[in-house]
Length: 204
Image (tube, rainbow, N blue to C red; front, side):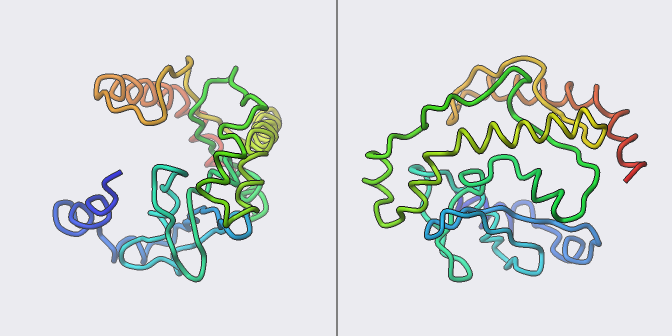
């Protein structure tokens, strides 16, 4: 996934990141990761980030296609493995109102069938049985979190930005035209929600 380039040359040389503005900003940030040993989500805030943003790298590391990231005593992969939509964490942190960005249209629900068979997961992650178990229930967790999002939206406590139509593409899509079309749809869908977003921010 060219992470060495993204978090190395790109981040530090080609498009240098403004660390001073980032760390001095009063805006909070939480980076979600999945601890393979426990199978649970681990969140890192700005105070826990290093200069290479290793936690962000871990949060972007998908199972099977990315290396396990070691950080602060944890063995980590993508936070979406354990917590696909971290709305409940946001509520727990005291955020009464939320803007939620989803990558699936309103009709989507995950199939109860696991994305990866247990036997396949054990081949790659046999040393992490808790992580294997987490991946087996990921669909149930996702659909439950989606229901929380729906209830929050109905109660006027959340604005959900989601694709206006189903996205037909693979997880590892490389066709730039397909990706551009998805990007442009996302921009358009977000623009249609701007007044609602402004309204909920004003109430927060």
